[in-house]
Image (cartoon, rainbow, N blue to C red):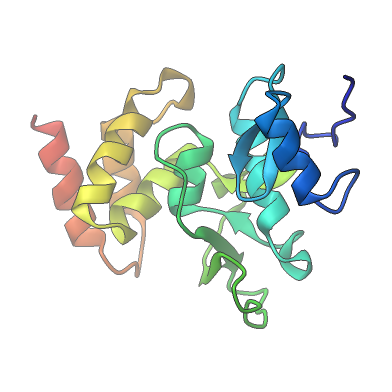
Length: 191
């Protein structure tokens, strides 16, 4: 059976197939579930770009071009966290936006984003690994942050060792949770 995939390798309802058809193909072993209502061919490996595309499918249409996938969502994209229960979307403060539609499965934060904070993966904007680490350290609970930070630091291709995360946290200004994040990363460095 030949399946035509969207450019990023993701199949979602409303394109070629309905959700029922996609679920049936998953049951038949033709597709694998990625996230939400996003599926991939079993022949397609699950990569960061594919996970980013799967999350991008879930983003409300009005925000798709402006929103940046961040925090725990970005950590999952990099393979350093479990799938997020809610997709964290970041919008630059200068791009004020309306509220999210009800039951979107997303949460929206207006933040400062520099041009080097964002990468493009699978057609979606995603915070870079270092920005993701800083956001996780400053915004997540210790129980969530520790394994994610260790995974980000331990993934060689991300170039995000704990010392670099610590230096990046020290450079942020006017960010709630900065002192707690510095203490957390310091404790991880002392292990």
